[in-house]
Image (tube, rainbow, N blue to C red; front, side, top):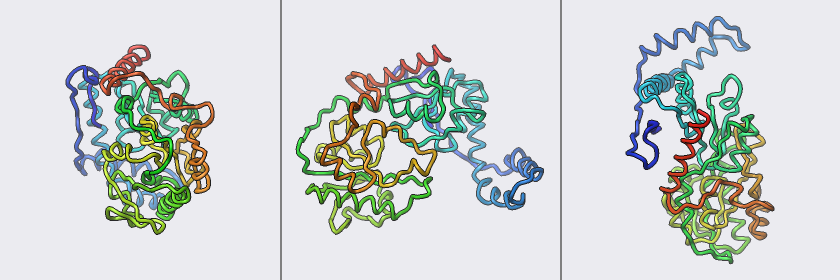
Length: 364
């Protein structure tokens, strides 16, 4: 969401966006879905009694099905109407991505998975075996290739491509300070599907980051969040927060990140799209992730660790900043992401468009 039909790619013609609005239809669901599902459940034997399973499904699951079932039929009709040669699915974490891919599969349309910039989470069962829903997988660089390989994707289905968004940063030349003075901390990236995740862990992230920068005699310019809600869970509500007895400014909003880049010398934060954006802008970005999610959650993708140093505690963070350990030996930004010499975001979109058309032509 949104979708564009196959004849209206980036900047070639006016793009036609389609938005779907959910609506509830309990009669439709009861007639075509709930009744048959419950009948099927009653025929099976489980460790738990069937009544318990049905109770939890009715209370916590069924009430959400009306939206996704109607969305599925909407996608079916959309594909029949536009008859695209392929569908690019820009994610996999939520049900509407999988539903759209299933609808494409039903209509015998090739589905192409596109990661969300630096991809940090994905499901193996969508990529191989009987439950596979994607035909091809776009790779924005080395990290994606590693993740796909680990999840069992065959090399012939992985397609290297340029991510147009990076074109916004390739020709910006901020001032490079070789002496660190000011630091920006980016908000903790909640990984709610991990059993180790907690508000305590989140607050510890800020305390350890601030303490590390204080030990290095660096001025903490601010903590930057996408939304104010990102900081509410740890009690930071206004424009300033008291962290480790230090008053720290708080900034919010997507656009603020670029504005803050030239005001600081280094950035501390979790692995994210901002990591790549900062490195493209020649700003030193130190990944700080005080939980090893990959050891506890199978869906966590950490292909980026082949190329980038990661600090898992305060001691490692201080050491990496002192030694300026960003990329591991023999690696650079070109290894992490696919880069092209372009002059504008439009040029990046043109490259992306040609690469997609080639995938459809050659492999479709």
